[in-house]
Length: 604
Image 1 (tube, rainbow, N blue to C red):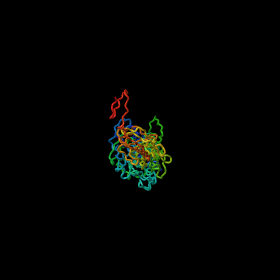
Image 2 (cartoon, rainbow, N blue to C red):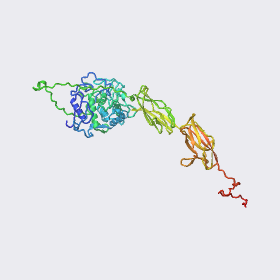
Image 3 (spheres, rainbow, N blue to C red):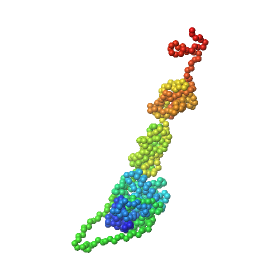
Image 4 (cartoon, rainbow, N blue to C red):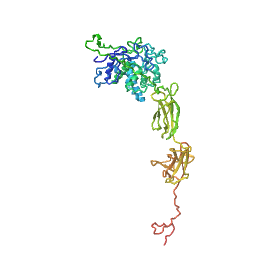
């Protein structure tokens, strides 16, 4: 016994002293506090004792209170009470090895539930402890590539013969039994519980209790029910007891949780070690042996217990001594287990689009509607309190109110949820708003959205006079154009301006006036934007006359159909008449005298 504690625990046949010693040893290694039963093992230490006359119904436990493995993990010498807590990580013992797919399922369930219910503080080691006690980690990891136990894992028929009496609830769909229910899969859910809590965690389109990913996710949600915080000892105990209402079950699971918290490692699927003792081995009446459905591993011989010194009888008490009074020991009381409430998201089977499946808006403006969905259960009834996540996907700068691309909204009493208001950015095009149920893998509800350019159905020039300039100069007059849409000013409209030679030909001119580009180049097509007041203004000097005289036009066109023209007149500079002579300048004016005209004589 110096190297390890080799006793295995059997319900109704194991000394409470051994259980208390094993649990105390784990507590010394910084494990969660286990609850040892009374030394006389009376009352509350089992779900159904040998003397019980009526087994519980199992309606308020995940497993129907079916048998479970009662082994404790091996405890090495350094783990004895009072020893140092600065211990090496366990890596060698076979019991510390968890099959790779099973380990992956526990870790995935922990991460998923911590993202949707962080207040639960679910540790994956709790799932591992329950998985070890319920099925020996899916029979040592005998699962296929998708994580499904092969063959299926089934418990005994819950026919009231030493077990709970649960009449068939699934038509044999999960357990193959159309008369009574059986616990199913690596986490041993009874069908009626699976119908409520079943999950599709591996996204293969079905909720399979024999799939370790589905079962681990469902077990985690079940343990977190009723707003439990598993970091609290009372909530942790309640969660485990809701799974199987047995004090010995609670202590055994906590022992494995503590063991896995000390350290573990992965082993290949199918090579895990099964525990050997089940809760119905010994003093269990005529209960059937679940080994017919759950293969067992040959039992390891257990060391003989140390002899117990008998207590002297009253007649053997030495003279002069007084026997201390006997203090009656009260059996431990199993705390009442509240049936877990079903989270709203678990009830939802469909996310239906209610309104605004197609959304449109112009750049920089608010969408006139918002995506709206209804969360419905299997009967088509609305489910309140479901968290709906709305997400903007695709290439767009559209945002929800507040500037985000995601928003989570709970459904109201009518099961409806609408996203926050959407506002378009400056980028045109199509994108999608996707609605999903947080924590579920149901089909998403998609809303098509399109952003188009702002529009103006009318462009009006405020001053209709033609612009004029001579060749080689620039137009100095200012031009203002008002843009309206359905009679209202239209700010932010992108207007295309093209210099043409005819109002009937939209083709850009190849010579004549031009716009001065930002880089100094000359162009004949530009895009201008109306201001907040809906006005478009040409600043003086932005329009060059060019080197060709003639009549030209600026054609202005806006999305929505608005159009107008600005007339341009370019003239050549005036040239002096070769037959005229400038007037002579009086002498002494400081300017040269006029040159005589040809044929004239100079004055005397």
